[in-house]
Length: 204
Image (tube, rainbow, N blue to C red):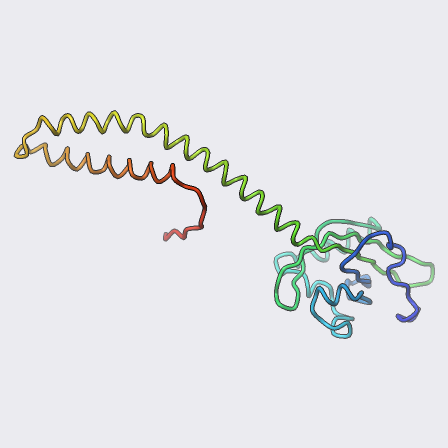
């Protein structure tokens, strides 16, 4: 059939889509709906004939041939597809793909998708927040347990220092030990005051 005669996405009308494309067996774009052009940020005539792989994020492109092979073999597939729009912004699409076969006609792949970028972003933020709360709880517990033996050592060192004369050769050593204990104590208090997370770069 001529492209203008195709219904294109009729067999998957029940799937609410923000992005719909028709692919040939090699994964080239044969047709695209208006939502797809808006999402990509390109005109329809600029994308037709191009491989869908060109719009997939680079880290997933090597899997594209496997993706096509699975769809052609199984007849249908669903999952998450991550593409890049014209501004190089990642868009996550929850898709359903279906092989369209008619006797005596070329085989096509219908791919319909919902944009779930915000949902995935929210899920990642929630997961990150839950992980942080778990780490925060563990850090607070460790700091609390650290303080108990630290206070005992701190008091014992102070007692020894009070019994030593400043001219005693061991006085300076004990004073240095006491300084290090105070540093550990301050670090422990900082751990207990943690309320937010920021990434930190480590050298070597």
